[in-house]
Structures are given as C-alpha cells and as structure tokens.
Length: 342
Image 1 (cartoon, rainbow, N blue to C red):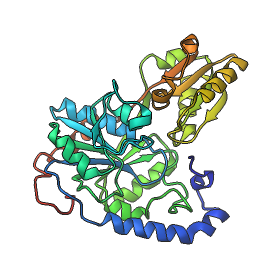
Image 2: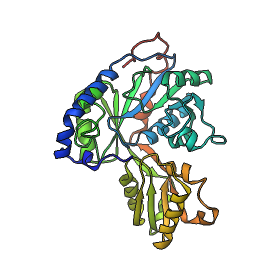
Image 3: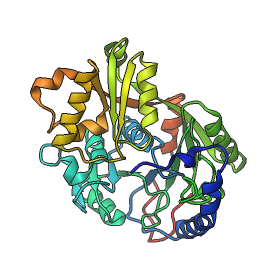
Image 4: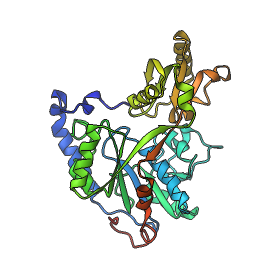
C-alpha cells in the first residue's frame, strides 16, 4: 500500500479538506490512546517511531542506535512487530530458518545488526527478549502504541517531506496532531535536509525537545558501482522517491521506476516481469536491502549479475550526541507497572 500523493502537498487540497473531519476524530482517538500507561518489564525501552504513516527512516535509525548501544557495551535487542510476516511471536529472528514471509522484511534486516524479536504483543515480546538476555530494548515503531512503557521516545522525521499537509489520517499522513505527539516524544531525529523537516524541528524545539540531525548514506563502494550505470529502480517501500533520489545522487541513470506497495510480497511473476523490463531497456536492476530479503529466493542465478542491491545506513551528524541519548537509561525500567518515564 502506498500513501496517497495528496498527503505530501505543502497545503491541504480539496480532498484533504473533505476528509479532515475524519482525520480530526482519528487523531483525537490516537492522541488519547498515547496518553495511556504502559507495562514496565524491568528493562529500559527506547522507542524509535515516527509522526506519520509511511516511510520516514525509522528502520535504519533503529539499526544505527542498536550499533551505538552495542558499541557502548550494552546488550540491545530489537523488538519489532514483524509487519508482513505470518508469525505473531514472540519469536527470535534467525535468518537460517526464517524468511520475510514468516517474520517480515524489516525484521530480517534488523537481525543482521542485533538480536531481534518479533512480537505483535509488545510487552510479551519485551519480556521474551529479557529472558534471552536483553539489557536494553530498542523498539522499532510503536510511538503511538501505549502497551509497553517507554523510557526514551524518539521520533524520526524525513527532512524533505516532514509531516506533509499537516493533517491526520485519512486527510493527511499524521497519526495524531503534531502537538500531542510532541508531548509524547523526548527527541526528534531529522533525516536529510529540507524546509518541511526544519519546520517540524522548529516546532519541536519550541516545546523543549532535543533535535538531532542525520542522513542516509550508501554503503562503501555502491556509489562507484552505480555511477554512470543505467538502472531500473525497483522498490516496495513507503517512500520510493527517496530510493530513486539516492540512485541519482550516486550518479545512476534511471531509465524506469517500478514502485510496489510498502512490504510488497514479490512473486515469481514479478521477478520475471522485472527482468524482462530491464532487458528491454538494456539496464541493471537496482533495489533496496529490504526488498532483497524477498527477491533473493526468487531471483534466478543466471540473472544475478544484473541485480544491484543498494544498502543504506543512517549517519548522525553528531554521533556523540546520539550516543548520549542512552545516558541515564541504566536505572530505568525497573519500577512497577505504570506510566513511561519521560
């Protein structure tokens, strides 16, 4: 499923205004839900979420934070819902036995950098991770989910798109009014440059929230591989235009784009069509790491040289500030069931 294009206009259009009453109701219900108390499981919980429906960069952010935590000597576990997977969990992801159909594409990516637990029930998943030896939980998504108490609440914002037209679903991309969501957030991470992201950063600063800045960087060697190459851009992510922008920045010539819905479950027919389209255009196929978790089992060996996987990682402008986010978390999460600590 792709977010409607009108969500990302700077000013709400006619359709957005017509849907605004529904958005007001949806946003109010979500805001009220966010104020509910969560269950304490005896471990510090860092939540990495976003204000909007659709891709903002929370998965690479959670992966970067897991790496930072491990470098500090922590034992982080990533807790993720496993969207698109059939397993409800709690289950620890094992790439030797699990695939995207079972645990979801993002969970497989997470498991490449930290031990990862998939669970639809967040408290149950956190308790399961604790039993496996976790000393810190990094929860991918769930900023609006009150079931598990959170001790550090981080919201990721895309610098180029920000909060779109500023309205709530279905009139716009916001999951709840921005002011209410800022009240449930400790820091905002703005990824990439853009006026839209700066506007959100300004609003967050006025409410005393810490602002961190970051960017998505291609893995070493990928830019050289793409420079001057003609490609068919294939992706099944929330914001496919971000992937295309990365390809252009690397110097690739995009001859065509094939954007599927987020978490698209590729079929053999999809793969055949992609390869045929690339052959017809005499170009390579460029795709994301997330998509590769589902394409890899279907991609024929004879066409492997045509496929270029484009890994990206989140790089903080000030890594020291990002690392200090973890300061003071050691004593949190050990209290009784109750509200999350700010």
